Length: 419
Image (cartoon, rainbow, N blue to C red):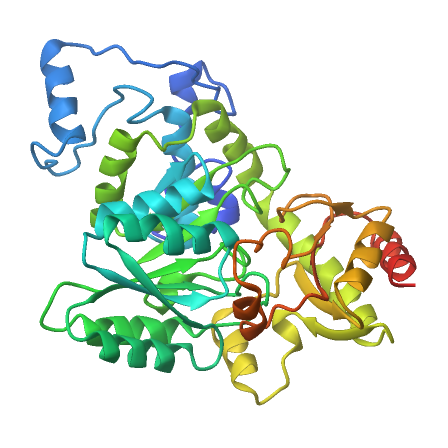
């Protein structure tokens, strides 16, 4: 299946997810791609094997319409390649790469594109694992990170931080939008514009967006100038809480560099995970839209509940506010991550968490089942409490990933837990 029909009209991602990048004739007519559980692939000739390695290790450039063939599953594999083509089609980018985890995708991307002495300016809060990487791992390679508050002022705060560091220091602007777990929105277009300004007369400054919460269904950062889009594919893309994986999509030139490091670091996903991701991608739009619908209804319950102090959800921002403007500009839906503060302290939050019957008390998000957790003591435990409070994460905050259960049951479960 090609990306376009005979008239040149491009198929929608929901359609491409069911057929793009796969020819049944190559697999005995199987409608679905089989699992290619092999470590290595046979060459037709010595000359072909030599050519594949020339391309794999960047010893020569691809000729027009030439593609590197299959070599070894650490380098490439049909299950991974089909998924990579389909997820790039979702993001409307040139190329995708799949990794063993979301953190593998983030770490490999940064290590492949930055060098000692470079700086990242990141929004905050970010996922706890990303925070640990920025604060404790990358400095050992002399790659340092300045964090600024995620929200209305992020582009301006990033600009001020870059000016303080001086010309040529900043090589990457890294944002999570919506932020984890505060759901604060960041203007991708303004951050991308800032990256262009900072990169004038020197090496390009990259805009990197963690799109796990809303993408690729409700937000496409490439439309707003982002260079690279990252995912924990464990979450919505996998969607069934039965795999761990990560993804990066972007321009071919950047993703090729990242994939070279992936080959040597060995951070790729395995073939069976690639096959599971293909299965999940087919239902991604249906799942995310249903989960978002459930979430909207639970928000209506939460904002009027006497034991809830505040609800954090992308579509709830006041009309006319900067957050509402950003939401309308770059999002087509709100997703299914709700954070809310209960009235009280950590003890009250724990009481509510322990009272859920349907929603499971577990970290992660984006699966078919509903999950609840306590960000300050669980997913973001490594972040200093005073920093979390500055980022809008309180001891009484609960994060809820809304699943596909019947909405009437979810409402009852939420009410009895609060009550």
